[in-house]
Image (cartoon, rainbow, N blue to C red):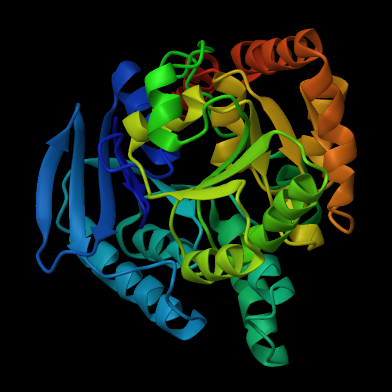
Length: 390
């Protein structure tokens, strides 16, 4: 079957960033299907290229995490229009797999279904419009209702819906009873990421030799609430803990974080520029604990962040500052800790036992790796995803 994948933010291992859609496309190739991706990039020209058995069409539509809500929305709508126009010229498409966010990709999928009788499966990685509404980006009552109507009609029009977390699955079932909803979480690349002994050369490269390293790797945006991560560093420095904090990534609040870190005189805090997958692997090598951080908003507890699954695959102690299904999972599997997002001193209390007891740290790290292998490996979830297209 030729499967059209609509994803505005498709990445490859070479480019870096979230790789879920790449993994899904590769799973389709393994299953004998032909994936065709329509995505966008910040270049000024349309590009078509082959990527490991995947046909990828890059539309010239600029997007950046630093864009404001209005500019982002315009980029989303431009993608819908251009993607539908391009898809109409492709031959032999059997089904469309539309990946949100943004929710507007559902408009493209519905137009393809209406105009060209192409059925679609809709993937939900974050609950829109709940996320931008709780973040305060959408305030107009009528616009909120329009977005909620768009959400429900998109779910109802789908052949089925794929949810990336159990909490997202439950929410969709409540909103549109009767819609088939499959749970296919993000994948842990257990082949690429392997538990490994720290490389002294990499410790020297990142300036963390002899330190217990806590890394945040991913988007540096408003939703991530990294002011709390910095507060944990400040509390740790005050307590004289041999802990070093690393932010690796890019985003709208990066420069502000750098300014605040300098103002606070944080000697235990450093920044690493955005990395491709090989670069992330190097940062993971020197990391002891992987931190997943969010602002204190209920909707953000429902997500399925890539950084969580990378940390599990690499066999790291997981640290989270939010509740929900991930907190429950790491506590049940004894592979991580929850720290109170209202009190950064709680980080000092929770991390100290792992500094004092190396064996305890190793057991938790091993538990992370076992969870990744048992539940989230690419082999397991890739097969589950491909089975949707039989």
